[in-house]
Length: 362
Image 1 (cartoon, helix red, strand yellow):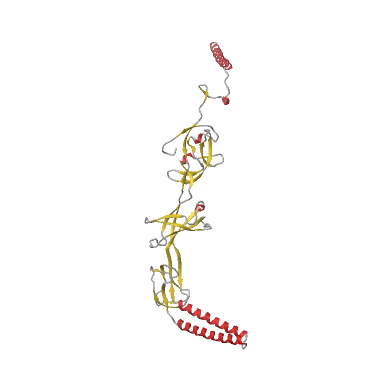
Image 2: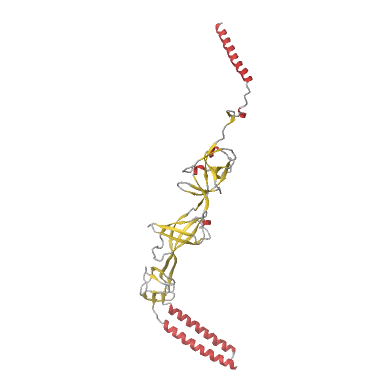
């Protein structure tokens, strides 16, 4: 009996407590959570703060760095143009030769006699032609006979020219000034037409050959200056002399030649060099990669605060990613760039910018 009375008392107390809560709720006007306006001293809450830094685009030149190698500006294999035995070697492998200088001599054989014979034949055919012409002028010779003697004279002249050229070919000469790179014959060797005698290379100027990506090839033009550094520390400067009109099918890169003066011959064929070609100067901002953001379309950009303190998203292009900073193109004028807090504000939102000065990028 006592337990029932105790249970009834507990139930009555619970009902009285719940009832008091409902009475208080009815006396207060509490809005739903979605429409709550947070106030501080009767004012709306402060706008979100972001740290900004005023940045002005600078002229940025991103060097195009490639690894290349040297090669002779000209290289030719000198071959025998007539047959004969080598009588003399005038220039040895590794020696310098000027244009037209004799490198080797072949034996005369009967070439000089053939020239004299051809000269006599020309003289004979000229006499025959002159006589036929005089008779034709007097009406004692036909035009057919005159034409025949004229053709014979031309044939004799052609034979003389051939004999003279063959005689001249016994002297092997340099087609241009350069270095004897390879020597393939010795005195006493018998040569046939087409046999290789020497390889001649022109090392002044010398060519630096590198390959540039298709992303940067539009920045290049003929005559543009470039620098190169060799493994031994030597540095040289030259200019672009050739840009390939088509990309390599395998690497999708473009071959570029840089012509470098080499009068002293210090630069050899086949040396490795690091080539630096200045890119196009363009306005750019130097930033920390940490401030980059993405918009809903997946574009990379930065967020700035305009004159009305509204956040604006600006798409950018990354020009260079260095060890200490990143260079981007985008804003064309002085801007207040958000450096801290950009992940917590959206495009079009009003914010309270806090200007940051001093060193650093954030």
